[in-house]
Image 1 (cartoon, rainbow, N blue to C red):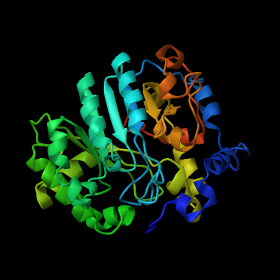
Image 2 (image 1 turned 30 degrees about the vertical axis):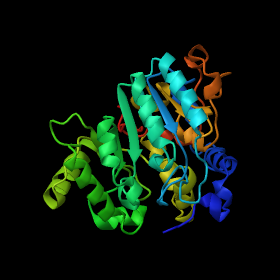
Image 3 (image 1 turned 90 degrees about the vertical axis):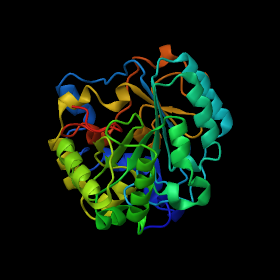
Image 4 (image 1 turned 135 degrees about the vertical axis):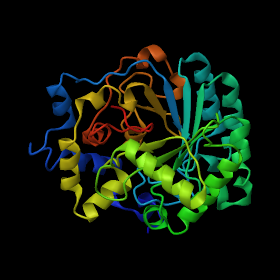
Length: 351
């Protein structure tokens, strides 16, 4: 298990241009597999267009207390990129004027940003319908200063979406590090104690599953039943929904695919599972991603590949909805990950 990010290790693949080069050449350049552009053109879905903005997803920093095996952010304790309060204020100003109904905070571990609580408190005042924090769970038990996070979340009616690779210790710790499973279980129990995840509760607690290897996730509804049964029987834990998310071939997962010689097979699996129905509702059509330094992207994955929005409005400080709505979405071969099978997004299946 790595303890440093790819960037800290000085790996060539940490460079977004190198990742895009890999995704554009080889089996795609030779024509062995169709590029994503050519594939969606077959079903008259190119160019992919942005619709009305519904979700503002904000990455408040790449710092994290974990170094997970497949992290597409390449987050870790050594990543110092962190959003300032000034940028947070610019986002709040935009929320006041936009029609977006969901604010989705992510990282890294978003709770590690020193201005995280201020941001939540201020953003809570501007009428967001669904306020999501994507928590890795272990942060709740990582340090005494985070022990009250369940109470803080409850106070602001935060919708907690938590990473949980599996209901068993072995598979979870393999992907996320030794001891992660036990800390996650403890954190989930604490959230349950506050009313989170209970059947009739308005305190939403959802889990996110992504595969531990070079394969696509199974049926989301079936996995949700399995997760609920196992976590209830073994630990008395309840939660609302399970989101099954396909691993995208970027950053650490791309590094893993190449090192394990699974890259071509995985790309074949993604292309063969392509579902044109999933294209209609991919997250980039109704979501805007904001980076830690305020730049705008079509999705969190494009943010990591440094593919900015195709618009004159490129930074939150110059946000203009009329320039962003209807824009052509920037695509590459990693987009197959969101359109395989039932589709995949930060909210789970889309088709």
